[in-house]
Length: 75
Image 1: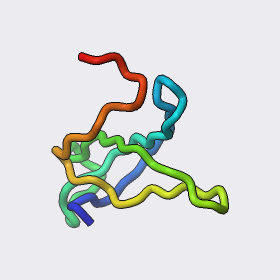
Image 2: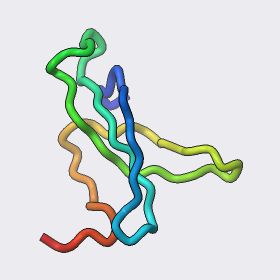
Image 3: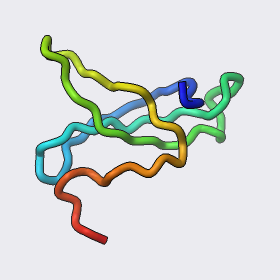
């Protein structure tokens, strides 16, 4: 979905003010891509389901502008 294939090696972090949860991972834009130099680093906010499991939503397409994590200083 949104040309996000082969996600891997993720990490998690909180926004600077502690109110949001984010995932950072790498993936590629092609279904035929592999674990090569075409993978890019991606990050997006996620939420939690009522049962305590993560809800990662839909991966955003590469190049999509996202709001910065809450509490990040203005640029």
